[in-house]
Picture 1 (cartoon, rainbow, N blue to C red):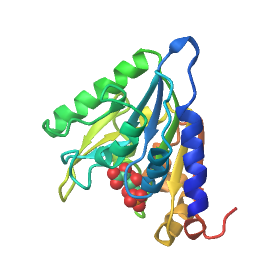
Picture 2: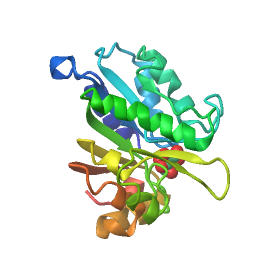
Picture 3: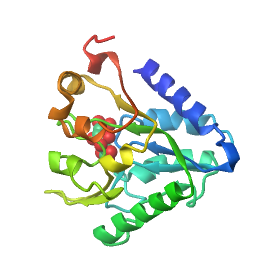
Amino acid sequence: MEELHGAAADLLREHFQRAMPGGKPHAIMLSGGQTPQPVYDRIAGEPFTPPAGLHLFLSDERMVPAAHPDSNYGRCRRMFSALGLGPDRALRVRTELPLAQAAAAYGQDLTNLLRAGATVSLGLLGLGADGHTASLFSREDALGNHDRLVIPVHRPKPPDRVSVTTNLIARIEHVVLLVAGADKRDVVARLLADPDSTPAGLAVRGARLVEIWADRAASGGYR
Ligand code: 6PG
């Protein structure tokens, strides 16, 4: 898993340091969950000052305060401050708002970034053992909402979520599904064999380049 974390940290570092022509904004999407945490910690431990145009945003968020241990934004805060990124460049879902308003506000933030000409050069996504990615848990989550960049996702058990949509993911030049652990082996095999059988496969179908970066345990020996 060390090799995977190192490679992912190198990829992020390379993209974080890209300057866009004409001073255009540059956006990178980060995944939530546990898997990328050691990668973000590595970046936080070897800080650098990225170009002024860099903006980071999360693929999804749980409707909890940033200080809550489950907050995806909260898990990235150490990296954001190590990179010197304030709230204008490390975009946060405003979970203090009601769910629909939090999703609408985050969608507006991402719309503004794209309207300013941002290139989304890279997007990290996680993969749940049930085949979800971001907070797109069903075919309907993945296939609906064509015109929106962000949606509210009601969950059977709290917390509810806010998630980017397939439409937003389709704007990303290079999507990497970062996967680790033996519990993900079956879903990685399913995703490779029949992508449209999983919400994750449906969610990434519009992106130009999609890769699965998996550790040995999750890849079941695929090379
Ligand atoms: C979240 C994520 C979610 C996550 C997968 C994998 O907020 O939980 O965005 O899509 O990436 O569930 O989670 P792990 O990396 O913790 O296995």
